[in-house]
Image (cartoon, rainbow over all chains, first blue to last red; front, side):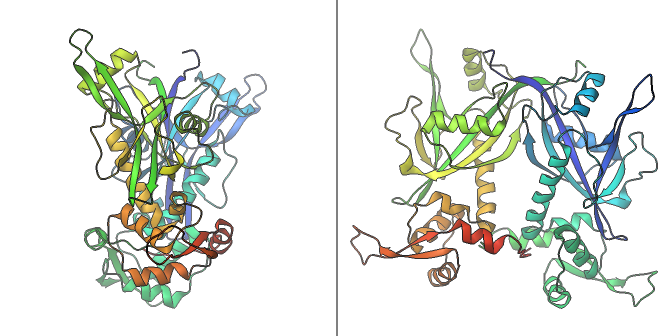
Length: 245
Length: 245
């Protein structure tokens, strides 16, 4: 029985946001900062994911929802539990031990990692107690704990999932252009997509609905706006399987 | 701090096995049995997944590998951590409470669920201390704890994954016929596949290698045998993305 593991449980949230202006996929990170009391030199100065302990009477999903709400004020965003991280040494590098000692956490903590998909514009980063900031996925700063690994595994999961499920529409505004869809795929997958084929393929989907509206406030010729219909998608794909290995 | 959750952590393993003779996808379950000491009437009599507590110095993956090895003697099988289950009430139905009391477990246990893919013939079920038995996924017996939910979520994950990744070959013998592949897909997805199209599509894959061998010991005309080359698959698919939403 002494060998049995009883420990802390937390959730950590990888919050992905797409910025349609800069065409970049971003991650929301919070600052981790600690000074030496005598010298005022920084002992810990990096970024981490937002996360928290799971409460006694709370499900894992509710816990993740609570953490996102506390950070961003948002609820009802697309959420996916993608992996549990429980390596015995996951929080044991030098900076983490300084931080952990200071915060009086238990050392072995298992974390259940979630990712959320939203639009960067939905979060007011100028006004939050956590100093949360968006960072492009391809230019991540120095990151504490094992959170870089967690981010990269979330990103891999997102890449795989966006090929076979229409989750990318969670990252787009309700009304979007076909170019926005292409920009988003190119940004997530880090590839260039043949414009003409892609356009035809997307427009032909029954769940991509053309609106009686065009872009406003653009310098070039305004493009047609579309919306994604989840209802239609689910009706079409409920019982169809396309084997594509 | 009193609100903070400190509890047991376990792994549970959904062991999927395909039986090429009966063409069924199976799950390996162990018996849970407890009698009333006075009346000898069964108090608990159902099946559960194999699982165990995670040890102090053990990663989650190592823990799942250990559990599978103890049950089946097998190592090196395809393994996937697919979800953590942590509902506060997950082990609180009547039979579970009788069982838990008897076994002196803590009541709230978070479990990290894995699934394994193997061939039913690889496990000697006639000779194991756990009374483990294969059960067809479509004819599951009475199942304890929240393990039915865990099995069904593992099955959903397997269904989705087998459409976009060649994991089904983990369920087949090293040498197989194209019919075996079709039977397996039909069994997992619970569909009928058009024979001719499927045959052509599979044979055209560069990573499906025809062997200089045919079936032996069959009553009808022996079919050509094939193997799956993971090396070739990885070389081809490493840098290609097919958007298929």
